Image 1: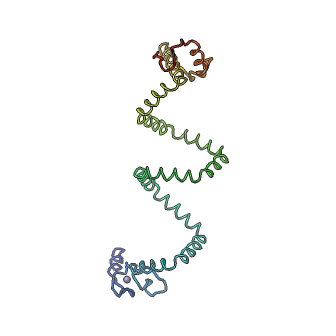
Image 2: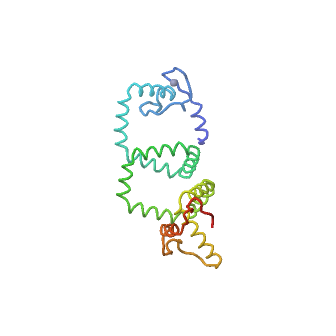
Image 3: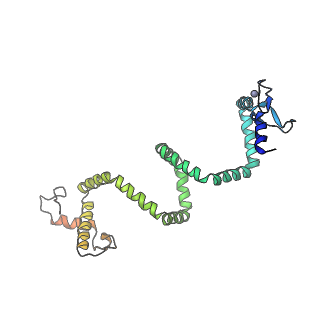
Length: 233
Ligand SMILES: [Zn+2]
């Protein structure tokens, strides 16, 4: 017999469901090896309803049995999950990405809450695995250079206004920050003019710190001068 014919015959065969007393396709019946036709005596719809009722009535019993079954079949289950994952890897990754995008806020809140609730655990883990984390981070950075660069660029573009506002405010409030910025800018300008490349951060090469410079300049102040009424360079 051709395979397709076999399938057709199967679809056409009917069986009476003992529960509902309704005849229907044998495709709606689960398996039971003890029966002659290898099928259960009631259909899958009746079985689902019956099983649900049973589970609700015997919750703790079912839970206990499930736990025992899981302990006995743990390796098999884990293996099956792994296999399943490998088979549908790309699809799952795609789904995960889409899910994350859609539920970003909820996931973030959930993660933050979880972190706060288990702060001590994470702290302990980090201090116990310092080296492991270091190696992992370095490897990640090495393998994902392009992505990191792209993300950083995107972030800075997205937060340009916010950052500008922050810097403007800090320049007004914090004289040391102001000196640090203005001296860096002035030195950068000179380097650019001379076509030189600066390969160290400005302040590591200067013989004084921004704090020293602030004190020095304050000593030169006239009585009416303050950091608030300073004019731009
Ligand atoms: Zn039925």
